[in-house]
Image (cartoon, rainbow, N blue to C red; front, side):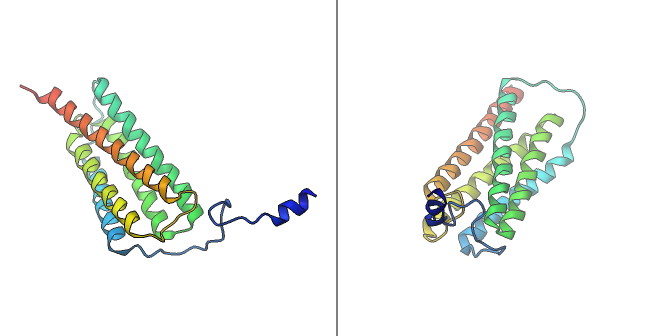
Length: 183
């Protein structure tokens, strides 16, 4: 009886674990490519932050710790998205998401290991916010764009949560700057 019920159950692409998608490169359209270009600049900013590596000791106040937590949460989300991209089997998006996760963790480490990474943190967060805004426009225009595990409403919600996370990290950087350099 149970075997007959399971045989009648049909898994859709979105509900199965791996779906039936093959490895491919998706077509994104102009807004998708603009979003990736902006976020690629953010990756460049994170890599450039390696230039200020300084192993000397430093003081961490509450704002700096909050910023570290937010960048860590954003890095964790990007790292979890790698699993979703593997299941989605989209080659370019997988490579790009891996680079984006590495960029987040590099910036996370630089907040710990440099005296003043403020310009890099601010620029990185600003570029990521702009990239996420363009992604919202992309999702709004591309009606047929769907991915495994992320229906459109959840995709919108995740994108808005990322925007808020980057905005909080950017505002914390402004507060840190004001506290450190106010006259």
